[in-house]
Length: 290
Ligand code: NAP
Image (cartoon, rainbow, N blue to C red; front, side, top):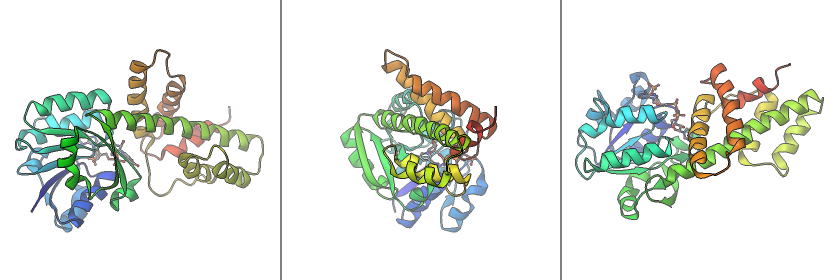
C-alpha cells in the first residue's frame, strides 16, 4: 500500500489528511498537539511520535503547517521528517511559506537526495476536506509527474507555474491581492455604515457590482452582519502571507508596493487584537469610532 506521511493537522491539514485515508493510502500523521489527530486515528491513521517517525518508510511526506518557522521545524528540526525520509521520496510543501524558504528547502532537501516541490493551495477548509483544492505547483515537470498520484486526493485543479518556488510566488501574489481587497472592503463597509446607508442594499450592491471579486462576495455580507461563523482564515495567517508577499514584491519592483504595505499595516493591527479570529473582523477595527 502506498504510504503517505501527513504533518500539520490544523483547519486545512486535518481535512487533507482525511482525503488520503479516503483514497486508500496508508497514512501516518503528526501534529504538534495530538488532540487534533484523534478523529484521523479513529479512521485508521497511524499516530507518529514525531515528523521523523511519520516519514519513516513513507513514499511521500506532505506538510500543511502555519509558516516558515513551523515548516523548517517539521522538515529539518531535531526530529524532522528529512531525518528518516528514504532517498528519492517526495517532500510536498502545501503550507504557505515565503519564496526564499522554498528555495532554501529545495536546496537542503535535494542535498539529502529528496525531491522537494512547493504546492501551496487555494480553497477553504471545506474544500480541503472534500479534495477540491486548487494546487499551485512549483516543480520540474518530471517531479510533478511523480507527485501527481499524491496530489490527486487533495486537489481537483493543478496549476503548474514552473520550477520550485513559482507556485509560492503565485500564491503570495494571490493572497496579497486578497489582503488588499479585504482591508479595502472593510473601509468601504465602515464608510457606508457611518454615512447611514441601507446596509442590506450596500451588501447586495457590493456583491453584484463591478468590484465583486470572490473575496468581496464572500466577506461583504459577513462584515455587514458581523457574522464570522463557519470556515475561517485567521488574521494572523493573512498578516503572515501579506508580509511574505511584500518582501518578495520589494525585491522585484523598483517602486515600493504601497498597497501591500498598507495591507500589512491593517493586518498588523488585526493580528495584535485578534490573531486567531476570522480575517473579516477587520471591519470591527476599521469601524471603531475615533
Ligand atoms: P491552522 O489551523 O492555524 O493550523 C496551523 C498548523 O501549523 C497546525 O497544525 C499547527 O499545530 C501547526 N504549527 C504552527 N506552528 C508550529 C510549529 N512551530 N511547529 C509545528 N507545528 C506548528 O492553520 P490552517 O488554516 O490550517 O493553515 C495551514 C496553512 O495553510 C497555512 O500556511 C495557511 O496560510 C495555509 N492556507 C490556509 C487556508 C485557510 O483557509 N485556512 C487556505 C489556504 C492556505 P498545532 O495544531 O499544534 O497548533
